[in-house]
Image (cartoon, rainbow, N blue to C red; front, side, top):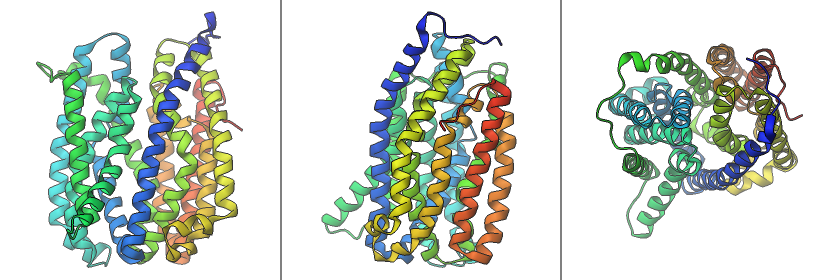
Length: 435
């Protein structure tokens, strides 16, 4: 592919499009992070560290399972829907989205049933937390809602409907959970966060389905095997990427649940959720940049792709640095929002903040690989990272507890971003880091 040095001043158009979409993404992601942050604060303050740890551990399990139930369709769906939209191929958009949502619904319902019935065994034999069983058995039924809403949200992302993508992917469920929980308590009911989470996830999925199929009705026929072949090819590599990313993100929490107690899970979860605020801009920009990367690469505009990637990376560094500085200097002050029990997690927040800042400074390296057809390269990188996370966190937690989990999480994040940045340089011929 020849390098196109942005003829006709198209670069400004691309940057304005990403900038305009990023404003929407920043607003929606701000609401999403705010909702998730408030949910963590509510759980910590209302339940205390031990019971909050059981809720966070159940939420971790449900999040992992619902992500796996999406069968890795996320990035391939974004990529192919974006291409179909550029070609005005409405039939393929409807067919691919319907097929993905239908399969995800079947798998997620089966997963919910399995984890609901197996909650007692997991609580007793894996996590040694008998109190986990009733929470997990109930929260397992949030899996279908999270799965279906997640799949359709990525279809909206492929259409560059960023507000709808973020609304159904990360905004609505935590906000509805909070609203339902406090409304029930004000009405005098003995509400639980687990029940509120299930109802909120289900409501989000119903709204996502209604919104999608009102604009893109169920197709007269689903895509045949030959039509789906390119989608399945990219999907196979992405499935491994998704599973590996889940391992990198959640293995420390799950190992803490198995090797330590629920209080350790709560402290680590709170520190991790807080550190994610540093990556706020990275996640928001990725929401609008992913389909733009795909379309620029498909059109051969690699010069514009390079410039857009670098500009967005610089934006991420500028916004992430002050947040990371606050977390590094005053972590205990920030964590006091969750209650006095959580100020001891200050060292965890410092360590996790390093990894999140480094990830932001490297830019959208994962999306650059995934949106340009280099899923297998990123898959291999993620396999290295997930192995380090799973094995390393088991060893480190056994010796150092929560601090071991934090250092492994930080090191894994740095490693995969360095490797992905080197692969972007090798495959695409440019460096995207914002530093």
